Every structure is written in C-alpha cells, then in structure tokens.
Image (cartoon, rainbow, N blue to C red; front, side, top):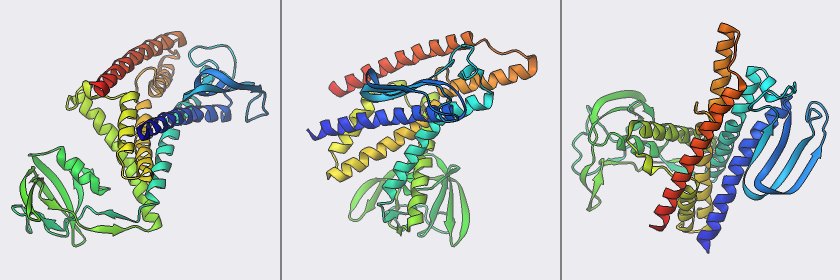
Length: 365
C-alpha cells in the first residue's frame, strides 16, 4: 500500500514537472504578444474548459482556451503558427528570433527553477553536512605525507571538476578508479596540486575491519547557517546539471549502454522503491522530492539539446534561419522544418516505447 502511494505521488509530480514546463512557454508567449490557442493542465478528455478574451497586454485579446483534463500527467501550450505560417501577426512563426528563443527557453528555465526551489527547500531543513576534508587515513594507505595527502586537506578539485559537495569526491574519484587522478587540495590556506595521483580502490583496514575503497576517511562535519543552506541547495542543483552532462557523455562514449536508459516507468519504479524503503514517511517524501528535483533539472537540460522536436532543436532552427537570412536573405520553409520535427518526434516516441517496454521487463523479470 505504501509503495502504491509513492507511485501515485511520483506520477503526480511528473505531471507537475511537465505542466510547469508548459506554463513557462505559456506565460512568456502571453507577455510577448503571441497568440495561445489553448493552455491545458493534464492530458486526455477535458473535464473543465473556459474561453475568454483578456485585456492587453496580458491576454492580447487572444481568447485562449484554458483546459483542465482528466489525466494528471502533464499539459501543453498550443501556440498559433508553431509549425507553419498561418498569416496571423500574433502567430509564433511571425515573431522575431529573440522572442522565439525566449519562449522556447522558458520551459526549461521553469523546470530548472522548480528543481532549484525544491532542492533549496530540502536543504533548509539540514543543519550540518559532511565536509570533503580528510580527517584520517585507513590502515595501509601509502600516499600520505607532505608530497601526498595529509590530514586536514580539503579536496577542492578532482580531474578539473570542482568539489562543491562531499558526495562529489566519491563520484569523481570513482570515474578514474585505478588510474592517476589530478587532485587539488587546500592545505593551510594554500592550494596544492597533486597531478597524476594514484587513487585506486584497494583493501584497507579501518576500525577493526576491512573495507574496499580509496582509504580516505572524511569525518569533519560543517554547521550550516541559513545562507549556507541556500548555498548548499544551489550547489546541489548545479551538481544535478553536471550529473546530466556526465551521463550524456557516458552514453555517447559508450561508457553507459543504451540498454541502461530508463524512462518514466523505470524512474517511477525507482522513486517509489526508494520512498517505500525509507525509515519514515517524512524521509520517504523527502527522498521522492529529491529525485524529482534531479528529474526537473534533467528535463531542463535535455529539452535544450539541439535535437529536432525538442525545444533545443527548435532553437537551433531559429538560430540557423537567422544566419541564413543574414547571408542570403532566405529562410528554411516552415513546412520543411515541420517535417524534420515531426519525423524526430516519431523517432522519439519509438525510443520512448522501447525504453518503456525495457522498464516493464526489468520490473517483472
């Protein structure tokens, strides 16, 4: 029963993520004078609708249809002339390039903003965090000393990646397991570079037992002021951005197989499992919101990739048309751009279907 409730919560939050993305497009379109034919919350049959003309400049006398639809799994913002020129001066296709870019970016901005707000809100309840400061070495660690690592060293960079949070240390060290790592540490107020430093995983002794790891013990805990908590929330949100880019890089380079991709079904299953496995309901809800913040940032980044059918692909065509017009006074016909987006959309739907089937297989296998 508990897991079902977490599944329901995850599905509702997914709907919020999509709806707030569309709201970003809607509000900027309205403010910039673009006609919006319909703004819908939810999908499927309409359970409530209202069409009314507003006043300039808010509704631009556009008679937008506002809809509340049956299934709480998203929403959409249908603008006039998104894929073709309808002749209406308020159509999206008739707007200046900068207006199109602002409207297209607004959805991702709202997703990022939501992720930031959730993360900061979660950190407001945190009074202390573990610091990336070495307080001890496991028995058998061989690279300590003035020319290596010392107790009290704060790790500030690993292979050029800034260490903003304690978790960053493990994340970036693990990516070079068994290889030389370029470290930068802060020692006595000075930054010290340790290029090609050996940091593989080995068996070490610690507190009477043995463990397999890097041999570094981080025992320092920092107390957080109110501003520190906001800073930690912002750092965690930017860390989400790095995680998304890192994952995309792993996918392109083959470090992560395409079969490891998860869609909505897989993510909901993981989120619900994490929530149901938490010690208390309060912790479970916090964990679900943490994952939702990560997914919100993920959507923000992914939607800006220059892939047709995504907002980033549309932005790419806006910029490309700007360059073509400056050079040749010609633009790519809207219908051809529409064909590209339509084809890419079908391909994305096919990929989503394959990933969904894979998620279902993994759940029941």
